[in-house]
Image (cartoon, rainbow, N blue to C red; front, side, top):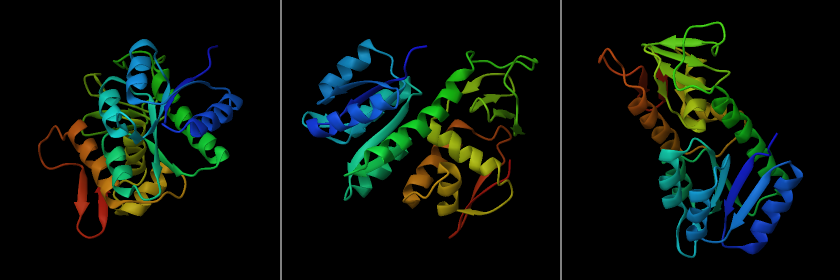
Length: 240
């Protein structure tokens, strides 16, 4: 069985060396590059399971790399940021990143984030087909709402007609948090904690961005308002 493959981009050689040593010990295969141009070259040649992207690069912005990669890949994306880069952290999550790690970081913390994200992403990639049929051999359907069917085990969503709706790891985690708290008003902090399974610096804009993306990808077929409703000054409630 081939090792999960990671591509990391950072302009600091010491960071890349730290990533390489830490993640090889965890059983990953990792390519490291120091520029946006090298990153694009690798992506054009190799299919990766996970990306680690520094937001400050000598020849470009890591956010642009996320924008380029996300429409064509469901691989996990972790961004590396400085502690003062709150805005970039939020924007990264809004445009498709799944997690972020602030510098300086402990190798053990980074490895734990990578392992958790890889487990979730692997579950999404486990079901081979883009359509799901109601057969004994297909993914188990755990939730149904407004014409959508959801498999928690496969971390996938389909329409009633069997067409798959592609969600990022972070988007699915937020949807799962809503489904498991159906009818309950959740604050943004509660959503983040439920979605990530651990304490995480919660930014209102990050949650709002993820909810906005879910609403666009999962429109209400009835047209009678969305099943993820905003509760003014509190948060959101899922009514699907």
